[in-house]
Image (cartoon, rainbow, N blue to C red):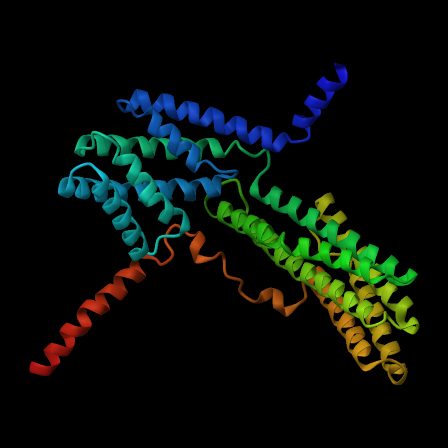
Length: 398
């Protein structure tokens, strides 16, 4: 019995972040239901539903989700009233409401979130007994639910977006360093194609974590823009570090693929095994060194000797490959040179000297935004479309 109790407690203690989030969501929906009933007649159910749909694991995402719910409800309420007025409540009005809401969402270039919310909230609004008063009531309930979700989402995490970004960088960088160390040991000891396949699989999983790192970096930047206690410089620095981590992970994946291809073609030549293993080990150490600096909270760049060692190891490998070019298969020589390039790029990403880090990265896909195209830009396009034919006619006759 004691083991069962300990096991049950451990299940929850190991998932503290998840437990915290579901508790916050539960309390938030309860508060939304209570406020909805107090402030709006019979508005508790709608407020609780909207709160449950809007609340997310971060304040930034919940603000966007809540705004999407409000935009969706406003459009949905108007379309629902129009369709019910024209066709009365029934199967036709339901079909017309969903159809028109989807067309309007598309026409306004609403993002993925708001585009889904428009027909969903319209169906909530169009429930039995729809009238102007009930539509207004349900819209007010939606605003209450979204507002409660935004407030409670602040408490869904124990850490700030910047702190969570730090954790993301530490986590993915540690995995990259461990993988490079494993590949170094494998190359030195003579690895098999199966081992190389395992490395490649792990590297692919690392690459799949890149979108979550970028999303967290964007959240930290957005949080710093309007939250008084957040520092913009810190958020920008974290964003640059996030881009550097992304570049590093891509190079690690490329190294794993190169080693796999070499194994398929007969393996790495004995003459350069030691050099390659040393270069990979040096890169692993440099990444681990940067992780330690981030964990210690030091506001400095990575120790230059660590990245210098990476470049020195890469230069030594390139020199040996060139010297023994006549004894090495051409394809294997090309793969060896590509490893040198990958290792040097890791060094550039770690000390943030790579010009590629300065290239502007799109903030996020348009599909993730509430409105994909700004209202001003949309108005200008519509105005040109309307005014252009009129202008042609005016020039022709006047």
